[in-house]
Image (cartoon, rainbow, N blue to C red; front, side, top):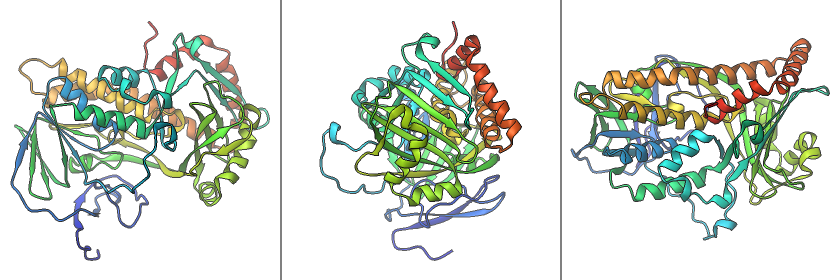
Length: 457
């Protein structure tokens, strides 16, 4: 490996079971496992040189990560009365931008369809009310379409589910902004910026050594550091990994016709899965899970050309689409990641560190929030003599998550395989299946309840 540039830190760690993943030559952020089984993988941080120190910070819980799941975990444990350290990588300085009002702020291309489990958790933590609700859109119905001229149809709506709304579309920046604001008022949380380089576990708990010499000690370490989790790699937890050879193309459009709170989805064989999610006003957010060759083409085209392509799906329902300004688009590689365990001694994995699924159901983030609900419950209901990182406490968390995560993995992976097969008998069968399911209200209601994270009671 080339010598580091001034101000960069290099190192290596060993991980198992991850296939190569593409990334920029210089990766800034937490270490990412990107090597094949047993390989030594180099990592580099563009971090300022720091003065070595031997400071030890002791808290009940240490959370590694800097996304919405990590921040929510910190708030959840803090509000349950535990002291928390939230460890994030050194932040890059954001580009300077002119001050704008909330109404003038560009729409974030990264959005989440949050279900009732996520809504209830964020509400209990006093985060939901801190969102800019003018930029949150309710999903009142879903319109799912099969492929071909005789494509099947499947519809879900809030009335049939006996709820006020099916889900809420929330921008990543809106969610993280509300979480950051809540963390400022959480006295039990210490936010630490640094580079984790070593994880040790003993009977007493877990200890994370940082590059600058500081040490974080805790009874429970929560790995919320994404699908290429450094924590998972340090615990030597193997994974089953399947690349979908697709990328999710995400961007936003204005539409001529009102969407009426309907989320549209089209399953196609050759072009992947196209979803248009409602945003406030006559706006929609695109998530196009496209095969890699098509994804390359879409990323090379202008957003105007992409809007014309989408007309084949959306013109009848939404009218002409126009890119929102400023034009912005992103592409995210898609993969299925199934760790062999979501716990280790004094360690629990949550969010994408514990599971990564295809976005066709829009529930990757919701699985992460459900992880937190079950982990907080397992800790809260432990016996008085057990520490929060006790082996039995974490085993209960792992057992509780097993069924829901497995069902979502099987459903999303199975649907991707089913609709990705270019065989006429399968095309006919899957379209008939959509039409049949649409005529079974009791089964549809069960599916909706599961997706929303609600019981049928």
